[in-house]
Each structure stands twice: as structure tokens, then as C-alpha cells.
Length: 181
Image 1: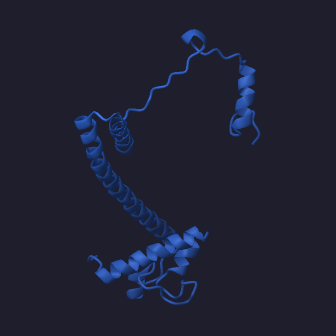
Image 2: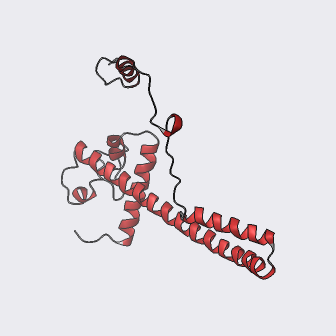
Image 3: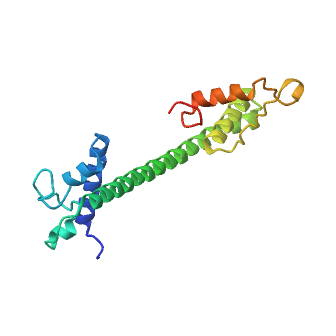
């Protein structure tokens, strides 16, 4: 199949956006598929949706897609649209991170010059705070390791019997043996 034209890609993007909106509104995939179908025989509005589901079949006067195909197409469209939105959001985050880093660079240079040239203690503190902020922004700091130990650094002692543990598991995990179904 040839690559879609710019207008066709725009129509497909519109269909995907409409599919996401309908799913967010609570419509199930089959309802969405019928609402956005190209064939008016299955379209719930009775009109062809531009570049709707099954547009290739409709253009060739072939049978409309079945319910399973509609559901699969809607799910694929929604997943693709959400992936695209996530990629765009991540790109925006990276752009903002770069902008904030550039701002920190400018502020750091002012504080650093005063700290080094004048020995200004406030400028030294400010430079250190900017450095800390940059480390957090860029993830330069390693996470702190936390180790939980019992009294005197030894192992933690648990005074729970096997029966008490089984009862706790049964309460919190209904799929466990002996628990409520």
C-alpha cells in the first residue's frame, strides 16, 4: 500500500484523536469503531467517517470490517495516539530540562565569580545551592542507600507465627488458599 498523502495522514491523526476522546469518554472499542467507520452501513451515525475504519474496503466496495477487526483497529489507534502523546510530552520535558540547565549555568557563573574573586561566603553558598539544584535536575546524585536492621545492627526479629502470617495473607490476598473468593 502506498504511503498516505499529507491530507490522508491528517485524517488518520484526526481519527486517532477522536478514538482517544471517545475512549476517554467511556465508549468501548466496538462503539468507537462503529462511530468512526468509513462504511455508512456499520457507522452508528449512518454516514462515512473520512478515512474511518475500513476505508480501504469501503473504497473498493468490499464488505465492512467485522467487530473483531474494528476493536483491534481502535485499540491499535488509541495505543499509537497515546504513544505519540507520551513521546511529545517526554520531548517537552527534555526541552524544559535543557532550558532550566541553561538558566542555572547563567546564575552559577555570577555566583561562582563572586565566590572565587571576592571570597564572598553568601556567593559560595548560592553557588553550592545552584550546583545541588543542577544535580537534582540532571539526576547526577546517586540515590541514598538505606538498610533497615534490628537492634544493635542485627537482623530484624519477627514474632509472628505461621498461622498469623497465613491469616494476614488471607485477609490481604483474596486469591490465596483459604481466603475469601
